[in-house]
Image (cartoon, rainbow, N blue to C red; front, side, top):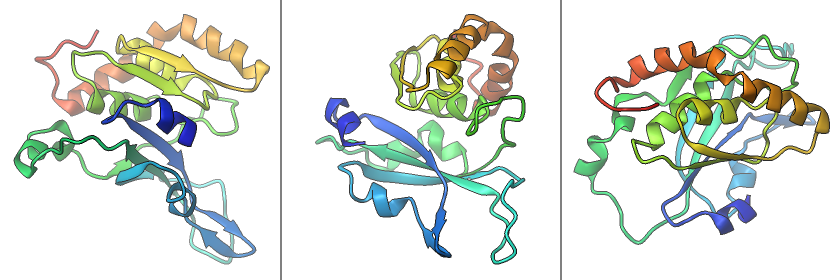
Amino acid sequence: MNEIYRITKPGGSIFYNHRCRWVNGVMIHPMEWLDKTDWKPRQEIIWDRSITGQLRCWRFYTIDERIYWLYKPTSTLLTTGEEMKSKHAKMSSIWRIPPERNNEHPAPFPLVLPLRIILSMLDEEKGLVLDPYMGSGTTAVAAKLLGSDYVGIDISEKYVKKIQDRIDKFETERNILDEEKKLHELSGKTYA
């Protein structure tokens, strides 16, 4: 995480998806290791998956994961008035989005997650999207649908081939982008 911080410009952000873990019956919250990085937390978003694959009799069903909006500080801060004009003020910090089901990767997430994040962060000015844990290529597809440049990294050769195949067919997933744009009320802006 600190290497990504090092190459990020001041004011840049990263969104980090993780869930609480349990070790010997004790919950380990992701902030325990995120606090050891140089990143500053801006917000914790709760991803309500509405289902769980982990049924345990010793605790409530876990149907959520966390998405952390982390940023690299800059010398200029937004005033409260400027913040309230932003797109973020229109969305809640709980996102009810079902998980990806048609994906053989062990930790896939739905296309709407990176679409929502990229749409919230970038306007007509396209930015670079970095995914250091590319998995099944969902973030790359989102970036490509939005016309943003992306860099993806993964250690699995098996998934790199599948990612390339998915990126080659990215247009087949455009309907998900159209639905997310409606939520953002971005009809007057150009996101190609």
